[in-house]
Structures are given as structure tokens and as C-alpha cells.
Amino acid sequence: MQRWQKVIKNSYASLMSFFTTFDGRLSSNSGKVGPHFFTKNN
Image (cartoon, rainbow, N blue to C red; front, side, top):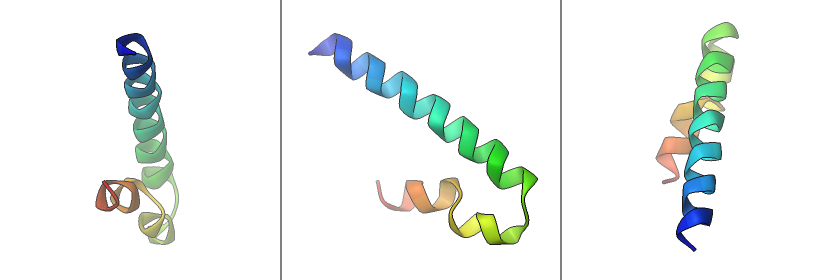
């Protein structure tokens, strides 16, 4: 199980960095769907 947790953590981290770049590139509209949206749900 620990191996899966590591995999999930890694993919989650890359997902967050992707959305951060995505959020930075687009207009303020993406701010609603950006990392803020995901961190709020955690």
C-alpha cells in the first residue's frame, strides 16, 4: 500500500504544478478552476 501512496502523491504533485502553470498562463478566469479550487476541496 505504501508504494501506491507514493505514486498517488507524486502524480498529485505534478498535477498541482501543472495547474499552477496553467493558472499563471491564462486569464483570471482560470483562477477559479486553478489550484485554489483544488486546495479548497482538500
